[in-house]
Image 1 (cartoon, rainbow, N blue to C red):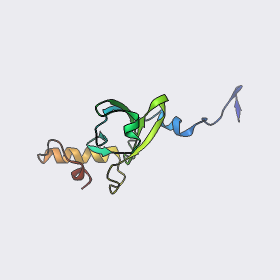
Image 2: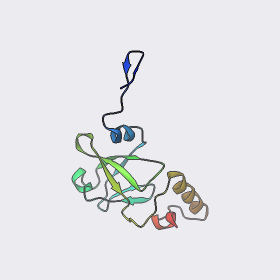
Image 3: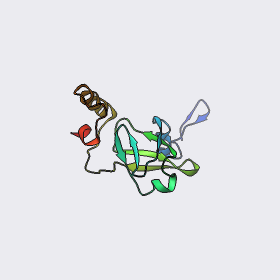
Image 4: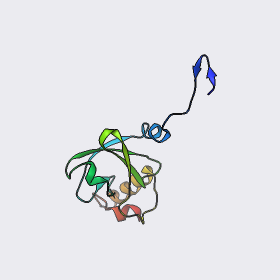
Length: 118
C-alpha cells in the first residue's frame, strides 16, 4: 500500500460492495412475477426468498446498464437480478427514459416493456 501524508491507501476490501454503494436506490414492491423498475420486469429465483409479494424491497440500479438490478436481502447482501426476458439487450437508463417519453408523446400513457425495447 502507498503511504501519503501518513495515511495508508488501499483498495476497498469488497470492490463490488464499494461500487454498489454509489448506485441510486429505489424502493419497489415485490410482485408475484418479479420486480418492476422503469416498466421493465426483473426476475430471479432468489426473489421469493427475500420478501413476500407486496412487501417492499430495496433496489440499486446502475444507470449505465439496466440489464441487471441489485436487490437487497437479509443482512444487507445484494443479489443480482436480471431482466425477466433475457432476450432484451442491455440499455442505459437514458435510453429507456427517451423511449418512454417518445411513446408517451405518441399516446401511450404507460408503455409496455416490449415497446420500450422496440
